Image (tube, rainbow, N blue to C red):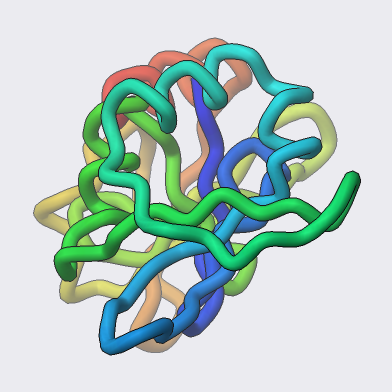
Amino acid sequence: MSLIEKNVFDFYVNGIQFEYREYKGHHQYEVYAMTLEDNKILHDYCLNNLKQTETAPSYDSNYKISFLDDGNLFEKIRKDLKALVVKNGAIIVNDSECIVRNNYGLYELVYHKKFADTIPRFSELEAIGDYLCQTINKAQLRNYLKSIT
């Protein structure tokens, strides 16, 4: 399973930074070639499935590969790699933020009430203001994460 951490513009796929840039009127994401080479699956995916752009020359470990962003690069990578997205410490499930916290060997899913229909019910729900919380075990969490990627 791949993991994508989303910031405002940049994102990280399995710890490898995709840095947003505007260059010669194009929107693109740049990746350090050496870090990309450290992850063969991601390296092969990027080189075979993403549109590369011209990259300004640089040397050795500073060499970057640039990929064109037609406005959907992030979503394309997420769907193609069936990646789990994390933003501000919360996983993104069907456009809703869900926090997973460890609670003495069990896990709690915490999410806003307006997203209750998008999160399966594993146990009794506890209301905490505008949020709902439910407790699940490790196997349920693992199966749930597999089902959303």
